[in-house]
Amino acid sequence: EVIRRSLTEAAGVDALSLEVPIILAAAAVASAVGSIIICPFEAVRIRSVAQPDYAPNAFGVCKRLLDEEGIGSLVNAIPVFLAKNIPYAMVKFTVFDLSTGYLF
Image (cartoon, rainbow, N blue to C red; front, top):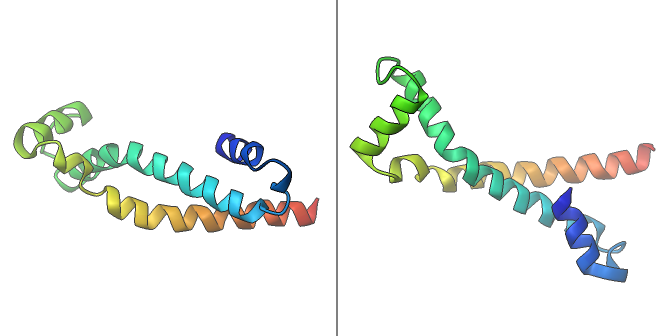
């Protein structure tokens, strides 16, 4: 919502005619930031679920991953997260905003 408001303010008087592109851009930016932030945590979670005896807790999993495989093992799935989450978020937020506008 913060990104959407910033883009709406930047568009100025044309904001009303650019409602859908603003929603799409805001959803894409928000989803990209969220995907980049969550990717390392998902790598740790997936490793701890796939190999329960890998380490006793999440911090241990993270430390062992970094020691054995390097930082790349925590961030190598970012393109996959982006490819999955950005289109989903764009459609979800557009449908939500437009449908609430029509219903209320």
